[in-house]
Image 1 (cartoon, rainbow, N blue to C red):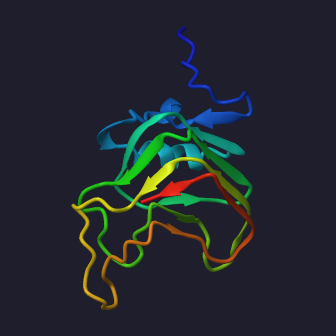
Image 2: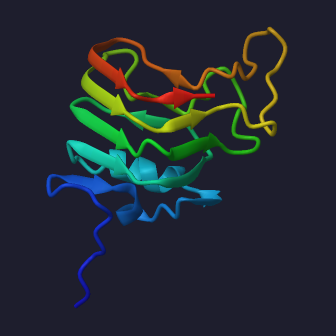
Length: 145
C-alpha cells in the first residue's frame, strides 16, 4: 500500500496538497483547502504555489493556517459575486470563533475577472479578508493585493 506523500506539514498538521490542491493556478483549489480546514487538524499548511480560489474559505475555531510566504491565493474569475464574497473569513459570524491564527501568504482579491459593483447593497466589494466576532485572532506576515 502506498503511503501519502508529505507536503512539509508537521506531524500534527496537514497540507492542503494532501487534500488535492494542485497549486499551479490551473484549477479551483478552494475545495481542497476547505477540506483541509474542515479536517479537524489544528494546523493547516499551504505550501509554495499559486492557488485559484473559487469560493470563500471559512476557518473555524482553534485553527492555525500557515501559508508559505510566496503562496499566492487569487480570487478566481467570476468568484466575486456579492458583498459576502471574501478569500477568507471565520466560520461562525453569529456565535463567534476563538483562537484563529493566519500567517503568511499573498492574498490577492484584485483579479480583473471580478469587477467591483456600484456602491449598492449586494455588489462585490473587493474586501478579501473578513473576520467578525473572533476572540484571540492573529494575522501575521501576510501580503494583500
